[in-house]
Amino acid sequence: MTPAPVALGWSPVTADGPAAREDHTWTVDPNGRTAYLFGGRDGGTAFDDLWAYDLEADSWAPLDPGPSPASRFGHEAAWVNGIGLVLFGGQAGSSFFNDLWAYEPDAGAWTELPAGGEAPVARYGSCSAVGSDGRLWISHGFTADGVRFDDTRAYDFDAEGWTDETPAGTRPVERCLHTCWLTATGALALYGGQTTGVPALGDRWTLADGEWTQSAAALPSERNLPAHIRLDSATLIFGGMALDLEFLGDLWLLRDDEADAEQLTPEGPSPSGRAGAALIRDGGRILLFGGRTADGASNELWALGGLEVGG
Image (cartoon, rainbow, N blue to C red; front, side, top):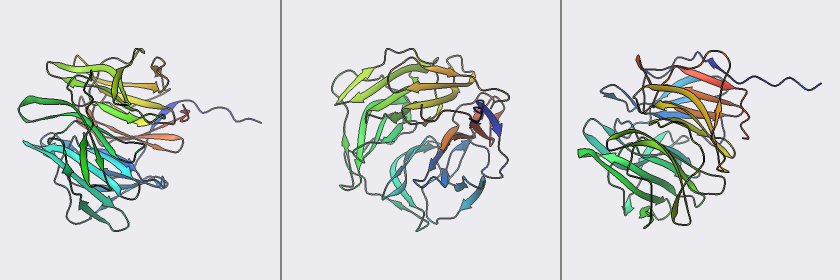
């Protein structure tokens, strides 16, 4: 007898762990057993703590790796095979960063990586993805004096240096607080964010073969700081801050095939609207942690079940 499908729905997870925060990163290791959370902020307080989340036990453990990256928020993090958890950039107060760090769990230590070549200007609110070439790609962002960028850079871990991969032609407007991901075909996709005078954007672009192309598909409403996670051939988007500065709590599926975005409607209770939260994928479920709500920073943990993660 075929089991009945599980309804799409959120459920709260009880697990004592990090303090309330937004603009943090949460990254799953390649074994799918541990997710590493670093940094973020609660109002004017920036964090430099590192936590390990045991996905099987649904439990948090603080880590003490010794010398670490400075406190920050709005940074980027990704898992790079053979290197570990890699962290780039971010901000704390008036300080902006363009440093690059790697955390190797077996050694239990952070290492600052050399940053030769055409390194990015220090920034926060950029986006990142590990390309099919094994390089860490970052694009756009914001720094002091209201400066926003539209450049794209890639870091080669073997050469220990950055190269400028900014196309010469049309490209997405300068922005920050957006998100990006690598598609199944190896293209870099970029969505949303904010730019000077416009608090939320709703456009989607793809960088492939040295050229940016804007999507013509129907997309979710404008937003900055949405949470996102990759599935197999699509990206799941949750929440963010809207054009009217309201916190969003909606859930969307953006497929690689450029079909119109699909809004998903979970049954039952859901996380309140929020921006700057983090999503991870744990097999057949999606986990959400933190973010800023209308009541301030959150340390809530939610699980989304019933999603076809092969979408």
